[in-house]
Image 1 (cartoon, rainbow, N blue to C red):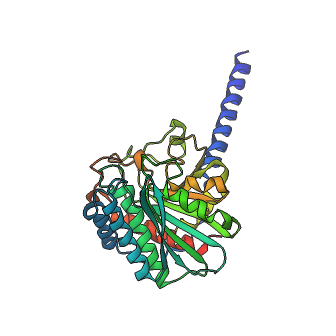
Image 2 (image 1 turned 135 degrees about the vertical axis):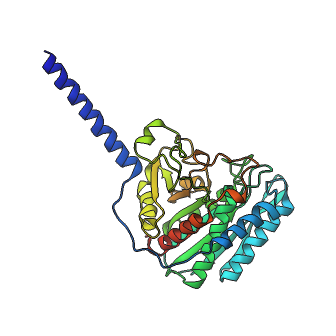
Length: 324
């Protein structure tokens, strides 16, 4: 009897183990694909300069500070123009105020379009160096790389406004406005990549947390990687972005596909493309699961790792060149 009980317990444990491993593969999408190490270089000093300008010179840049938001938009547009993009503002009104997304286009009409975006507003009176001056700095440097070495496809770079509360989750988000404006082009859009917090990296054990304890079985305890995140039903796109980035630098790349109910999965502008059936994923340092200065006055430029940020930009650029 004891022998039968032990065998039954062993079978149950084996079944549980197999189920957990299958779930991990489905969520984390392990891939052994790698790419050649990129020869592209991004200047970490330029990234720091952009972050400082946005988070210090134009601080605060929340929805109430229209003058600073305008300066941010002009700053971004100037860099897009300098890179050779066809640049325009997408103006829209919210509560009797006019806000604007900044759009820079390359290779218009060359095949299926890839959209890459990042929001330039910050939460309340916080400096928002990581959230999200880091994403905008990366967007600007991507524009420079694309201008110097244009991929044979159409690229649309978008700097969004009004991502942060009180507008987050509503139709007044800049990305919601942009998503609605391109919904009719769905068939001609490869997908959307949103850059959301790219500058916080930690090598200490325990520096990375997760929204569910189970995820600790599949992901590192050190916050030394960049993540690609998306919804449960867009796993193919999430994995495609990760595969495009892997191996182009020595920065580890992880991915997660999960229901939007998992806190953080839809916490950025990519969420607004899903209702239109447009594939969209977020590239992130995992935000408040790693950066303890999230949405505080401590989110300052000195806390960011610009060398690893530069590697993220390189990896995204190489993905732009290869993803389909």
